Image (cartoon, rainbow over all chains, first blue to last red):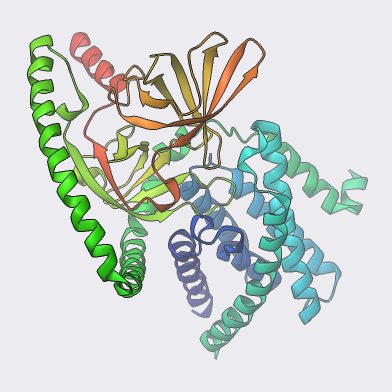
Length: 163
Length: 283
């Protein structure tokens, strides 16, 4: 029963994050300070070992971002799925339940997603759509900071669900 | 195989590399036709609308408060402007009536012949790299279909891309996959306006000898089967040559980032009209 509640909890969180990301925290409104809430959630799920259906959430989050951004099916799906798999792999090699490790994983995950999208766009399109490096650096730092705060909030809520 | 067992991360990265090759960036049909996409669009409609209405309400209240400061002087200027505009409006309505009579005489079709459906933008793209999309609060139950043109009173915004039950996704003219057949209003030089994925558009396929200068207005030609003729697209801000052709950088007339209310032109894309005719012929 707990497992079902956990799944439902993360489905609801994912939907709330998508809604916030498309209405309040979107790049059009916040520019370089925009917050990629769904990416932060996927990083959290890939670090939290008791969540088994993380792959499903990685797929769903990628699909929804693809859908709302008018991108072709697969751009964000592959980016999120691959990120999930890589983090899970790293987590099996290191002791991940530490503040600094969480910060570093969030930081490098956001850089990974930017590099992934950047390389894909440079193959298929000219690079006008890709923001300037200064935009990306500020965005990575902003998301790392907000990401850790989100981690604490989700952990609290998740813990309350279990207790 | 032993190598991949020893280094599973390398295997994963290799797999990702091959998967990336399968992503067709310029083929969006699968996503727009998927029923799952429409379900997600419908599920997120009410929350998106709720958050959008609430945030807009707060922003407007705040702007109203700010606007009240120093209102008196502005009011005086506006009153004199209104008097001038009334006079101009009278002259324009006279000209419009005359224009209508002459158009009727010549059997012209104008964009005014199409009905419009008013809609509000309730959400935008959540991606920084593919950001040229907005979500509007009208869908199939309001009569929207894929490919319908979208504009504001200032000019072209884009066209309907995915239609949900109550909301739809609009691909903006600034998106890298958007293309609109257009004219230079002054010289009638024809070209294709494409989005560059950021805030700008580029007019392509112009010959080197084309009569186009910075400041020229660009309007839709009506020949692409989507947009009616004569809607303002933008203004030329830069001209540069590439090979045997020239290109023009266009600033869209509509401020794409702050668009709130839009009008969907009730015009079926011509490709669909043709297919329906074909069905009738086949029957």
